[in-house]
Length: 161
Image 1 (tube, rainbow, N blue to C red):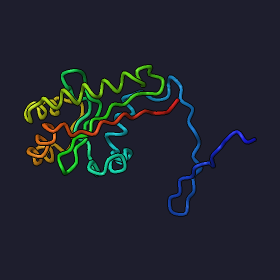
Image 2: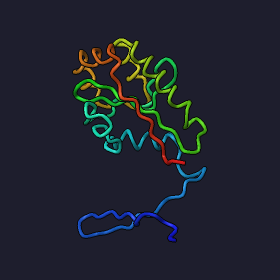
Image 3: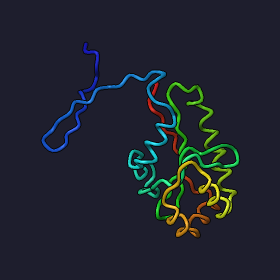
Image 4: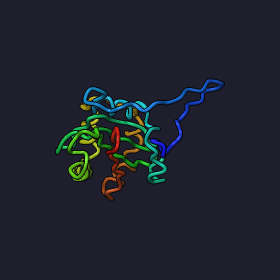
C-alpha cells in the first residue's frame, strides 16, 4: 500500500510547471501574525461566496480590531454591508478547538453593540486598515446588518490535526 493517498499537487503558470511539496509544520515555521497578514493581503484565500453566497467578494478593512472583549484578527466587508469576522489559530495552539468558537461569538456580540462611530474608531486604531471609504459609504447597510446580527464568523488555521 502506498504511503500517500493523493497525487502531488502542481502549480502551472504558462508553460512552467512547479511541483508543490508539503511543508512540515514546526514551532519555528510561521506565527499567527504571518497567517493574519497573508489573509489580510490576499482575501481570495477565503472562499467567502462558497461558505455563504451573501458574503461573496468580501475585502479586508481591519486587522487586530479591538472589540471590547479582545482583538478580532481580521474584519472583512462586502458591498452589501456584510461583515465577516475571522479568528486565526495555529494548529499547535491548544485554543484551536473549542475556545476559539466561543471567542468568535463573543467578538460578534461585542461588534453588534457598537455604533458606526465606535466601529470606525476601532478600525482607525487597529494595526492595519484598508478600504475605509467603502466602510463609510455602506454606513446604513452595515448598521442594519449589525442590528440583525448578520455576520459571517470564520476560523482559519494553518493546518489540521
